[in-house]
Amino acid sequence: MTYLIDGHNLIGRLRDIRLDDPHDEAKLVQKLIGFAARTERMCVVVFDRGLPGGQSRMSTRTVTVIFAPYSSSADKVMIDRIYKAKNPKEWTVVTSDNDVLEAAHRRKMQTLKSIQFAELLQRPAPPAKPGVDVAADVRLSPKEVDEWLDLFNQRDRPQNSS
Image (cartoon, rainbow, N blue to C red; front, top):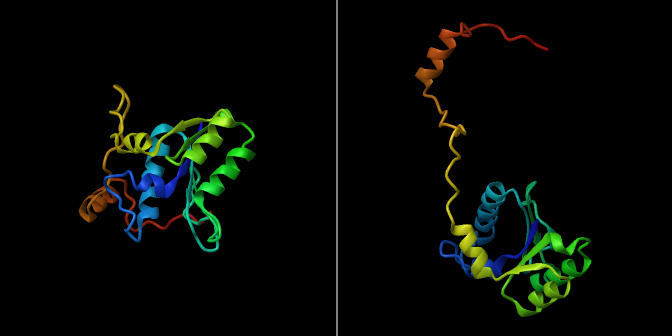
């Protein structure tokens, strides 16, 4: 399942990001990257009025970031994507805009209001499953690095050039 998200609409519902923050979009994208990793879901987030519009370099493998052209709006971009979706049942639309919700319902897509999705984003990551090794903090001090190099006789050894 992929989430199609009205970015600024969602930011307006979050407690820790403000719409007047000049970095609000980047902060939301970071939250969505964490959410996508936690849930193993993909996200497409659409923001209003970006220049020149289109897919942003903020996009990652799991989160696609799109800015509506200045002459358009996130709502119009989302409605266009809703009608062009090949497998509408594989999408969940996140917005509080009635026109966008109506278009999603017509295509039989799942929907969540922005406030509902904001609650999902605020949830902490689930605890690790018993018996599953959680990655430890592996930062080593310079002294610890030296001790490991000495232990494995790697200090000052030439490296193979392969």
